[in-house]
Image (cartoon, rainbow, N blue to C red):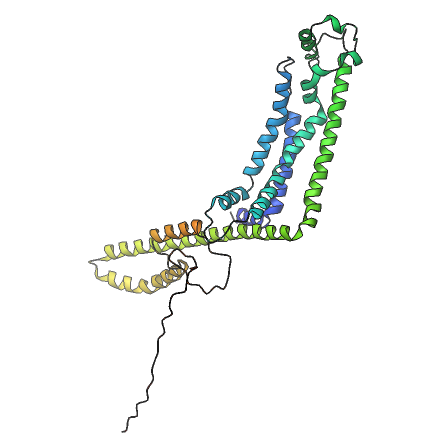
Length: 345
């Protein structure tokens, strides 16, 4: 159990490296999924394009959503976006930075899927087999004798060698090589464009907007750290609250059980100091929040009215935990008078 706790703490302290590793694993998994996927083109004029579009677009969408779900910052972004402004204004630049950081990692696996699909060429062959130029690649003199429906039905069978019977019009190997060449060219172009775009986003953009980039990055990290510290504080408070509550229950039961027994008084008196010391230590961790209603009000106030990002303020806190923005209440002054009394003995 200690080993798992140490691993969990390490992953929490190195969350960015951990998420980069997860994105790399998902990218390798997407490539492995495509290699294990059994691609079966329907070889029908009305279904080839729809099937190929589904294979090319549906898995990347699923991988993108999985990348967002596995990112712990999704809930933090949603919470920061939907929370009431209160006395702490929401910065759109910080929200954009958080979303872009998550989207960049989540897009790695979909990009790998699309690139592998285009480089393989099966999907492109199935989608555009009916658009092969028969006049340039095959026996164009025989094409006018076929109706457009018959020609499309014949060319739609090009991805299926076991049912293709149009070698007299167009050699299947010629059509396959032609379409795969175009698909691979599109695949390498896609890889090049995405690489250039990633380079621009990660390297060039901060050079032109360095100040805004640093501000957004700082406050994004602050929101993440603040949320973690608040969760840790709530966890410590809940443990102390439960411990004090259980101690009070056992003390009350002990008094009821020992009632009427002469030796019970001595036992209770002996155990009382130690229990009082432990209860005092746990009560200090409660910070004065001693009942369910106070805890609920504290959590509601934290969600609706987070404290302003201004340390060392002298404004008094109001009932909801916020620094008052109005005029300060009058300060009560207490005067103490000292007098010397001479006593003659």
